[in-house]
Amino acid sequence: MRISFLEAVKMIKNGSVVALPTETVYGLAASIHQPEAIESIFNLKNRPRINPLIIHLANFEQISLYVETLPINFKELVDFFWPGPLTCILPIKKKSIHSNVTASLSTAGFRIPSLEITRQLIREVGPIVMPSANLSGRPSATTAEHVELDFGLNFPVLDAGSSEGGIESTIIYYDKSEWLILRQGAIPAEAFTSILKYQPRLIEKNLEKKPLSPGQLFRHYSPLTPLYLNPLENESHYSHILGFQERNYSHSKQFISLGSLYEPKGVAKNLYANLRLLDQKHSLGAWVDMDFPSFELWKTIAERLNRAAEKN
Ligand code: TXA
Ligand code: MG
Image (cartoon, rainbow, N blue to C red; front, side):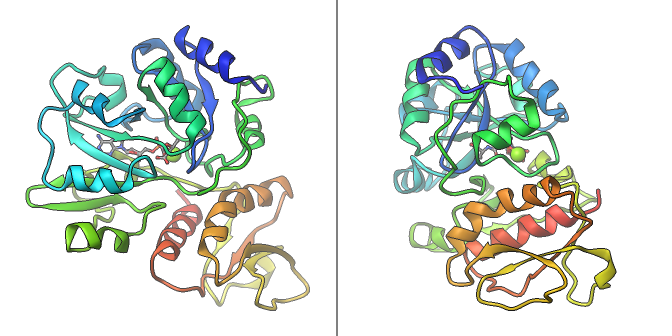
């Protein structure tokens, strides 16, 4: 159900959950002051309670409601990247945020979205929490239709067309003496070097250690359709090929274009829509052409496809 800006404001203030657009992906939004609405986000998504939510702010000043000490280079980073697809994990003041947002951690994730309508709404209702608007484990939603496919036609969505970025925010964390990347995202690792004078290290999933980001533990971005990333995959396993417009593939398979090898932004923008398309077409399986560059946004695209192809 499409709702207007004013309806979205009213519903969030009254303690409902609504889906909102952002420049990365659509999110399921609740006021940070409505613990019951926050609780229902976990139920709606079937999201593990130990996976914390990102707090979305309208301006920099709101940070001081929750955070006392800011890590080194934080100000420079957010002056450069906010509003935009950067989430910073920061140590929070005790009891300043309900434990169902933070999963009882002593930190929380913050970002200021760059989509104007989203920020305007946060200005009206105050800070909101907002995970991606998809059933837990499935590809994120980048259109209002995707939200309705996961949560039903009656679910309230503020429709602003398809999300420009198409991939979630990059998550960073300052640990001891350096900034680390906890989730690759719309801002590539290389983009931080002009400010930090080093490229932040990516912290990969390590099953022996407690993860710095609980989200690493769970299945993510996966369509129901099995994905095959191996170049030598047995052809009888799949009916579709996800590939690039510049290349020719076997004519015996149905081709879905990921976009151009020269336009990673376009590939990112449509990535989840393409993964969702496979399920809509009841695909037997899809072979994915992983032969693309391995720098900047391409790295995030490869990571999302690798995660999407994981069996559990
Ligand atoms: O682009 C985005 O970030 C989107 C849009 C809607 O803003 N939101 C989003 O939220 O991707 P979600 O909930 O799907 O992913 C949030 C990730 C999870 O992997 C979670 O574990 C991690 O952020 N996270 C949240 N708080 C954290 C914390 N205090 N420490 C470490 N990781 C945290
Ligand atoms: Mg998500």
